[in-house]
Length: 252
Length: 262
Image (cartoon, each protein chain N blue to C red):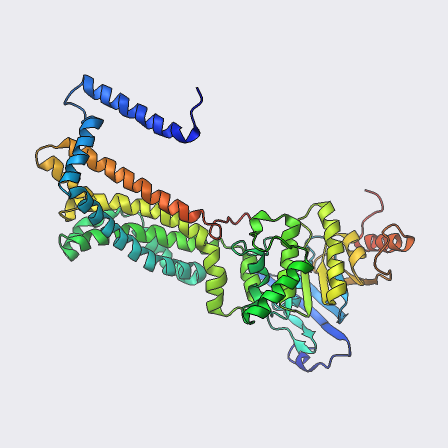
C-alpha cells in the first residue's frame, strides 16, 4: 500500500499513541496516564480557561527574556566580533559565565527580583544571552574577506557598511542562532516557572502534582510544551527559508 | 623617489597609472619578507595590461597595492598624478571568487555602488549593464542560482556600473571551467572595446595573457620584480594559431622558464 509522504509522520504518531494506550490499559494506574486521560486533562484545562492563560503567561516571559537578550547580545556580539581586541578582553569572562546553567541563577534571580515575572524573565535572559553573544561573534568571523574588500572598494561609509554588508552577511547565521536559542528559552521558562512564579506551563506541572497527584494534567502540560516548542521552531525555520536571508557562505 | 614627493608628479598626456620603485616588505614571525621589489610601470589610458608570473610570486599582492588595499613600504603608485592611498570607487577590483553579494539579486548587485544616484538614473544604469554582460532575464535572480561564469560577469557589471576609470581583475576566470573561460575572454574584450577602460588583469594563464593584453608584464618569483614587458602587437580579433601569436606565447613561456614540452 502506498502512503502519501505527508501522512507518514501522522500515522506513525497515531501508532505510537495506540501502543501507549494499549500498554497503559494492561498496567492501569502505575506508569503514566494514557493518551485518552491526557486528552481529558487538556479538555479540563480548556474548560477552566487555564490552558490559554498559562500558555500566554509562558510566552510572555519567553518573549521578554529572549527579546531583551537578542537586543543586547547581538549588537554586542557583532561589535566584539569586529574589534578583536575587545573580544580578547571579554573572552575569558564570557567563557566563565557561559557554562553556568541558567538554573543556577534561580536563587539570585529570586533575591534580586522576588517571586514573579521579572525573576523568570531574568533567568530566560541569562540563558539566551551567552549563546546569542557567541553566535554573533562567530558570525562576524565567518564573513569572507572579499565582502569587506568589495564594501571598502565601493566607498561605503561606516554606517552604510554595517547596514549593507555586515548585517546581511551575518543574518543567516544569526537566524540559526536565534532558532536554537529560542529553544533554550523555552526550556528555561518551564524550569523558572516551577520555582519563581504562580502561573505558566511550568507552574501547571508542579501544581498538578502537588495538588493531588494529577498526572493527567502533568502530562497534558508536557504535551502542550512540546507542541508550542515545535511551533516556535517551525516559525523560525520559515524565516530562515526566506530567499534574501537564505544563502550560505559556500554560495555566491 | 619617496611617496611624499610623488603627489606632485605631472602625468604625461594619455598616461593613467604610474608605478615607481614600488616595494613591499612585510613582517612575519619577526622576519622581514620582501614581496615586491622595485616595480616600475607606466600604463596608458585605455590600455589592457596582463600581469603574469609563477604562482605565489606576488601578482595578487601587486594588484592589491595598485588598488589601494595594501599600503606599499617604498615607492609610489599614482593615478592621473594623484597618489593612491586607499580603495576608491574610481578603480574597482574584481575578485576571483565570491565577489558578488549573495543576499542581493543581479539588479541589487549591479546597483550596489549607485545608491547616491536618483532612482531613475540608477535603474537606467542597471539596465544598461545587465545588457552589457548579457544577463537579461536574470535581473531578479540571486547569485546562488547563477553559474560561475554568470557570477563573474555580474561582478564585472557591478564594477563597470560605478563608472571606474581603472578595472583591476584578479584572476577573474581562474575558477571557471576551460570552455567558460575562453568565452569569458571574448566577452571581456567586447566590453573593453566598447567601454574603453584601463584594465590591469592578473592571470597565471599564458594563453589568456597573449589573447587579451596590449602588453604583458612578466614577474619573477618572490620577491616579485619585473622580468620583462612584452608588447602583443596583434590586432583583435586575434588568430590563436597565427605564427606571431605562437611566437609571442613561446617567448612568454620561455620568460617564465617553462619548457616547450609537458
